[in-house]
Length: 290
Image 1 (cartoon, rainbow, N blue to C red):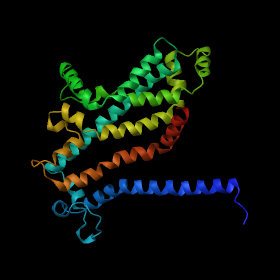
Image 2: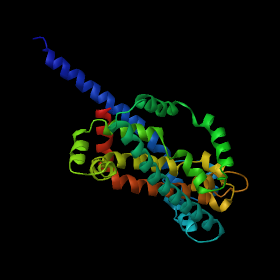
Image 3: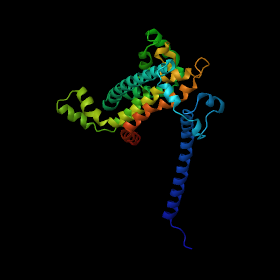
Image 4: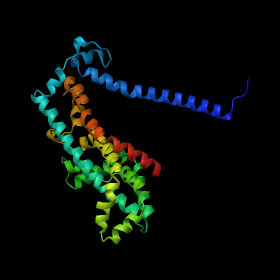
């Protein structure tokens, strides 16, 4: 039998690696999707059954109803608390995403498009903050919020995260590969520096904006620790803080806890579906240019 050629051997290895890689990602997806699927099934069952049996994927349709979701929108005392927390999270996430994208875009634009002294050092200092865990920064940030008299306010939650290092890094990596000739062309046409930044460069960076909008909205929507520290009034609690309170003996309402947790996935899912094409383009372009 004739020996296999190098191309055949290489093709076989590629096929084996592709099959192994695909199998690995399928297993990882299973571990990620399984808890969500189990939680979704539990949201259609009474909370008492969840307490007795825990999360399971038992498809017993005789015990599955829409009662928990109906309870969320029944507008009783517990329902109004949940809907208020949902509204607070929507507002906080919207303001955080818009503010973060605007601030980080201008910072990254200045670092990537202009030559000035200490530019690399400034960028290094921005990136260095990514290496510091939030648990270390939490105490000095909280002391700063107290001195600024922003405790129990929405701005106290929003301001410390407006200048996100990871968002600045992504914007900078995306824009650093853009031709600088666009700036010169804008100046020749008489555009101001602000006009070049907003009218010429910003539309080109739409995929990066979409990518960071999705990631920032997910981070803000799921943020638990910082809002829990800053807010003191129950009517200002965000959704994660409110749902976390239901795990305590004082809350202990599993009907709202599970159904409310599943329903809270909807806004982030809507954002992702709206921007998924830009998200993929932005992530690929950012990885290639990085």
